[in-house]
Image (cartoon, rainbow, N blue to C red):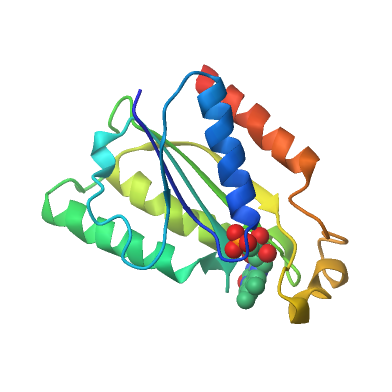
Length: 180
Ligand SMILES: Cc1cc2nc3c(=O)[nH]c(=O)nc-3n(C[C@H](O)[C@H](O)[C@H](O)COP(=O)(O)O)c2cc1C
């Protein structure tokens, strides 16, 4: 099974989740092409080369980070030009994805993270991947001037998250996905 992992992190929370995913995959005997997305990353990627893709990002203004949005735009255009995105987006057997985010949710909780995950998921849905799961992991607000948000919002106190418990849950979910 060929596995790709695309993730964007600005303040480091998603990196913790991403490293946990990669470690769990490695522990289960799988190799993974793991790509930390930055400006102009990933243009050589062909998503259809992979059987399983993990894609994750921190949530910024309800969407994935800008570099992730831009990469997904470029990949969508490339796959559209190649004729890979067909009307009705028929399923491709053996092509699966897991989409995840870390989010702070200070104002509306998980509702402000859902658009980010749906945004990333659409590219895979358009290509005929089956989205096996969506993971929403709380992530504290790291910049000093935003730290009050980690206690003041709908999520309650999310200081220190993702914590060891969150990361263990992610590792267990990776094991669960591998059973699919
Ligand atoms: C500038 C900024 C904007 C953010 N905007 C949102 C937002 O709109 N919705 C949300 O749920 N969390 C928001 N967050 C919280 C982040 O999504 C959360 O801390 C996440 O774990 C960051 O991931 P990263 O450290 O991998 O970049 C924001 C954080 C920052 C620093």
